[in-house]
Length: 239
Image (tube, rainbow, N blue to C red):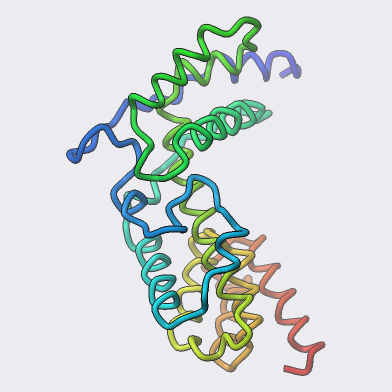
């Protein structure tokens, strides 16, 4: 297939995603995302604000609850049909998702009325590319992908915040298990591996070894490689 034919296949691709409706109102995002506490409920992480969070027992308990909710609620992990090669359509998805974040910056503010307003504004613009028109015609799959992206982005922010704690061993009892699960689920995986390395105790090293064992790892091979790299780094540190 030529490059031109491949691009045309994206333009005509039907993702087959119907609009869904919440029993709670006009909300697009599932309740598990809408009910997250600030600052974890941003549509796109506000990292400067997150980095300044006080490292209190209450905030640590909140971080634990957020990770557990993202891992345990199936509504936060929808199946998202993937566009055909070469995948240029994803860039158009991301462009629209940035517009959603700018207009509706909190997870509880994302509504179908707001999304449809952006679609209407988009249709009124001149010079749309075919893939941009595809987004407007199939906005449901773009929002489904936003749910999956938010799960990953929020988990990454929580794990990154935990990994920067000056004494992460104090919450290792619950953080090691959640970090390992995040690597397996492939949400915030890089930051989860960083957290396991920051903790560096026997349980964290055992989790990294399980993840890195390509003969029996539940993680993707990419994440297994990252876990293997962290084990090598710990060895260099003499941990």
